[in-house]
Length: 110
Image (cartoon, rainbow, N blue to C red; front, top):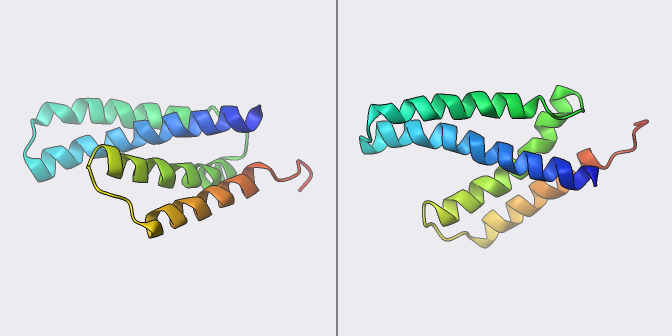
C-alpha cells in the first residue's frame, strides 16, 4: 500500500513539476502570454511542497521520484506534445522504474 501511495504521489508531483516548467517554455519558445508565469510559479511551489510529504530522507525521495518523473515526462511527450515514443524511450523509462522500485522496496534496516 505504501508503494502505491508513494507512486501516486510521485506521479502527481511529476505532473505538477512538468506544468511548472512547461508554461515558461510556452512563454519563451511560443510567445504565449506572460501571465502563464504566475501559474507556473504556483505549480513549482506546489511541487516543492509535495516532495515534503514523503517520509523518506530527501535524497532517497528525490532519487526514487526520478524514475516516476522520467515515465511521466515521456507520457507528457506523447500525449501533450504528440511525439511518438520510441522503443528506446520505453526501455529507458522501464529501467528508471526498476531503479525506483529498488530504492522504494529496500529493507528498512538497509
